[in-house]
Every structure is written in structure tokens, then in C-alpha cells.
Image (cartoon, rainbow, N blue to C red; front, side):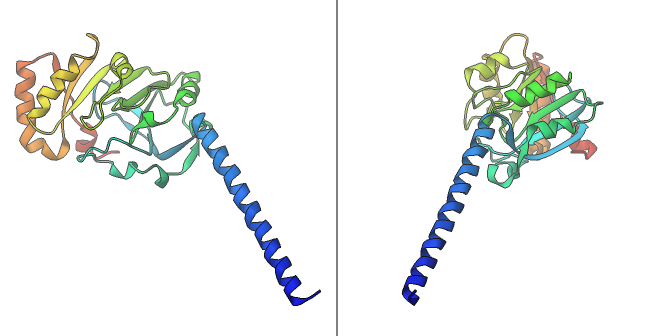
Length: 236
């Protein structure tokens, strides 16, 4: 066999190997997409057992699952590292739920924006174990999952979908400036009469906006104040 023939055969073999590797990669990618669509795999940034710091269940023990990915992108967000889905490992939801201790009574799904993902399986697995399912969301994407408590926190950059307003058990409005009071009132008109209404100061603006919030609630007692108590307690 000539040198040129050997060289040609090597090129062909290398090409076949590259093709096979590319095919395997494609198959794995498609399988990942299928598992993500089914909610079997989700990008999980972190999970931890702590004390709920905000809203109705403030002070209660709660297990948090923070999902990666966000298409809202609030400039004052305190978890910007959650925005990029690709930075967070795809995690088996079954394995994640299985490792939650039996003492846990509440699991809070947060983000990022958790409704970017199919949460049907996650909530089903949790409720099979008699664990309450809570969510913290902007409501800007399709609602999936079965929820025992639905905390809706609308953002001007991408408004909630209609079903999110219908499901809201509590409406949490973050107050950055005085214009946000008007936004809060408009959003309060869209939720049910039973929905709890909360105003929560944006953490870095508390020295300027906390006093106006106190006065606003005194004059509009349908609202309550939500305090980020976990930050004062210096816990996750």
C-alpha cells in the first residue's frame, strides 16, 4: 500500500471517528433537552435548609431550591449569578428530592425565574411526601406545577401572565422608589380579594424608602410590610 493510500485511510478513519463523536454528542444533547422538557433535569444553582425570611411564612423553617435562568433581569436583583442557566449544573430532580430530610415541611422553589422550567414533576414528588410546595416568581412565564402557596412578585420589565394573578396567594411588591406605589396598586387590582398584599423595600434603598412605606401602609392598611428578616439574621 502506498504512502498516499495509508494517509487517505487515516483521514477517512479520523473523519468517521469525528462523525461518531458528533453523533453521540447530538444524541446526548437531544436526550438532555427531552429530560429538561419533562422536568427530570433542571439547572439547580443551590439548595439549602433555612428560615423563610419574607412574606406570610416569614420565620418558618423552609428548604429552598434555587433554579438557574432568568429572562426578567431586574437591575436591583440580589442574585444576579442565577441569571445564566448554563452556569448551573443540570440536576436530577428525583435525586434532589430524595435527599431532602423527612423533617422538612415546606420547600420553596425560587430563582432566577423558576417558571422558565416545567415544575410538574418536582411539585408532584414533593407533595407525594406531604411536603408543602411554595414558589416565588415574577409570573412572567407559563405556570406549571401544583402549588400550596404562590408568591407573585411582578416586575415592570416583563409582566405576569394572567394565570399567575389568578393563582397568587400573596402579592409581593418591591419598592425601589415612590413611583412603585402606583405600580403596586395597579397590580393589586389584578389579584383575588383573598390575596395578601405586601410591600417590601428594595434592600439597598431601605434607608430612603422604608419610612415612606411605613406611612403608606398606615394610610392604606390593606397592605402589609414584608421585611427581609433573613438578611438581618445573616442567614441564607
